[in-house]
Length: 147
Image (cartoon, rainbow, N blue to C red; front, top):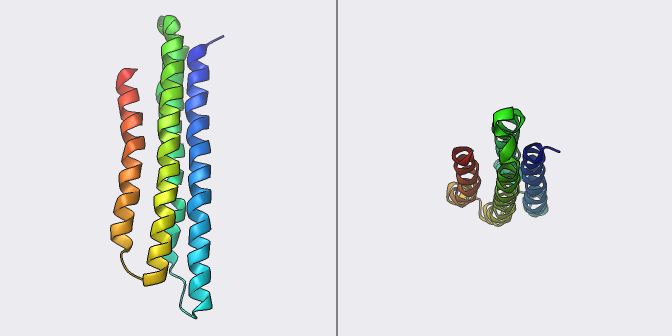
């Protein structure tokens, strides 16, 4: 059994689960904000979609780390003894990336609600969403360095 391949799969899977949860959280708020606009006979700003879709990028980070970096390393016979290391990196990085997506979804939900109600502050709210994204990027890059 190749623990490195399992680690690669785990990082991809956990990242995708985090993205799905984050998108679900933010997406509900985006739909709610649009509903409030429709009730008030205001146009629904399509820019709010950015809040709902932002957590999707963490799936890409999991893919990049797992498929592009971990899988080839795990398949290299010279790294046969590093399976447990790759498994640990996969679990830790996958969780960090997943929680980043969930936090991003929560921040995006608040941003969508505020921007939908006031029509202001989109860039300010998106900066917070971007800070949540940074956690996933750090986890991915530092894991790549660890490999």
